[in-house]
Image (cartoon, rainbow, N blue to C red; front, side, top):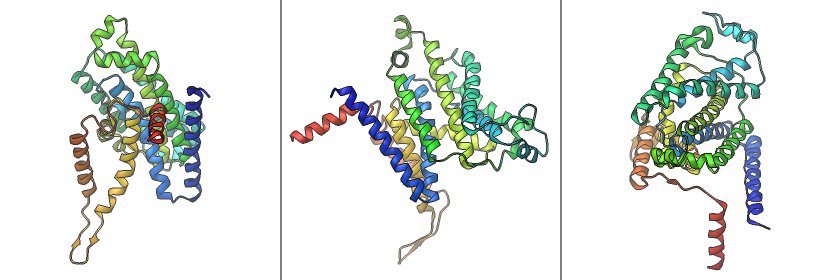
Amino acid sequence: MNNARVKLLLNLASIGLLFLILYLFSRYGTEYQIRILNNMAVFITLAVSYNLVNGICGILHLGPNAFITIGAYTSALLTMSAAEKQMTYIIVPLVWPLNVLHAPFVVSLLAGGLMATLFAFLISFPVFRVRGDYLAIVTLGFGEVIRVLANALQGVTNGPLGLKGLLPYTNLWWSWGVAVVTIIAITKLINSSHGRAMKAIREDEVAARAMGVDPFKHLLLAFLISAFFSGVAGGLLAHLITTISPTLFTFFLTFNLLIIIVVGGLGSTTGAVLGAALFAWGGEALRIVERPMDFGLFKIPGIPGMRMVIFSIILMLVIIFARRGIMGRAEFSWDWLLARLGRSEKG
């Protein structure tokens, strides 16, 4: 059996094992455990797509919260019935044709991704005219503009009141299915000629241009694909928490994603997956430090916000002792694992 077929079988077996674990959790897991797994999958989708621009292309993009917002509102509005919209928009009626449009959940996710891609295309021309800190400021400003518009356009987003009572369509199968598709699609892109061109732009844009690489075309491709998956993840997030408002999509969301990909390893898809998993699980695991603790001789009262203090300390330790993140730019591969297993058997 050749090496390619072995790796294909291993990939299929790992995906099968993942969905077996999800099946067991869906049958026997608690609601809290399922919620953590759903959060983990959504953040994996967001981190992997965000890493494509920041890590693979080397562009400091600070506006993913804008695309998440667009995807969340688009998906939410399409899944709400006309009666639900009429009851929700009590101050300013929802504009036509959004007040009559209705679509299945999967169509709403695709629409959210496509709408985010459209906005990404429209802003790509001014965004990629600049580089470095200027590009970061432009994308940061776009994220804030979308948040302000979500707050002001009551006839579209219902303003500060937000959208409530969304149906909880997001389950383990949807969230992890999208995460797996995102990982496979972006990994295939990175390993293609387009991905190698993106890495060349990251290392030296002038040299890449001299070798015939068109920076704008490849950066635009990465930007649009990242926006699409961010929009889809926004739709999943909306139907996971079932309530959205402009306060949910602040720069703090972008900051969390930036932490995830830096800790995981900027430029590593594997690192983005590990960083997202640790962030989603660790944030919940550290809640215990905010509860009152009785040690017999003394008691420690619950301190709100303490988990974020400890989380920040852990992040600082990771950056100090692993400056390139957990994975650096390395990726997990079956070749590496099979080689290690072969060495252990010989030993």
